Image 1 (cartoon, rainbow, N blue to C red):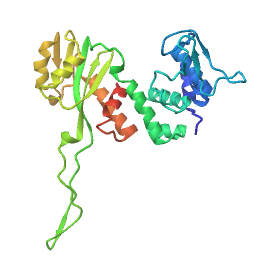
Image 2 (tube, helix red, strand yellow; image 1 turned 60 degrees about the vertical axis):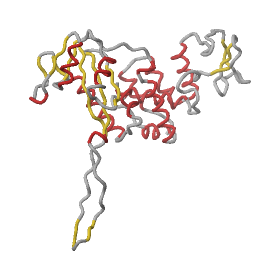
Image 3 (cartoon, rainbow, N blue to C red; image 1 turned 180 degrees about the vertical axis):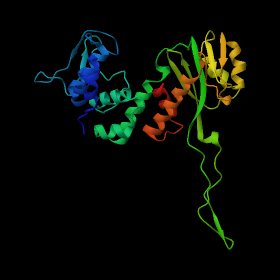
Length: 301
């Protein structure tokens, strides 16, 4: 199970040096460590704590790499590995499995499930889910400097989550009820989570989960994600008509009348992002809790 054959297929169609080195990194721990060290430090290994480049590898008695793949900093006299300062630092999971998880998360447009990682690596489901949540956390916008969307920006919101349950049928015979009776079905919005997103025409995507999109919260999300100098494109929701006055230009399409594009005015790109997000959740993960949905939204973004 530990022989990951997935990256082998990618080599034939992609000559990137990174992709070419992935098969070996996914199968051999030493190759995985060397791959990670090259990606992080290039030709200049340095201490992740003090930044000193005067470092050396800690070797075993036979001259090979130390079993823990340690380095020693000459400046601060401390030992470290390539994991220090990364999402892998406090994890005992072998780096070859991390390499495979990184590749699998990026190779598929709709992501990869923890169960698939479990099957391909032989790890427990708990460890596989831990890895994937760490990788999704690393993809969140808060972990890198980002500017607001500009130019032509499509903006919309959607509801993601389960469908309302139907009440079980109850038969009454001679005054006696038969069948299991459920409580009242929860409200539609109580079972779903709001996701707002903006798509920069020909550029980036910004998406986030929200508690609601009322007249009080929608302006907050819109102003946090889109520059005032942008050309905003939305659907016919009245709230956007009021908010659009604050932007350089605002156009909308009327979905209720079957209008989905009028020249360059359309929200098809952001609708496509929502469709891909939902297909990722339904087709790959099948179900995602509200607690962790923001991680999957960041991955799709």
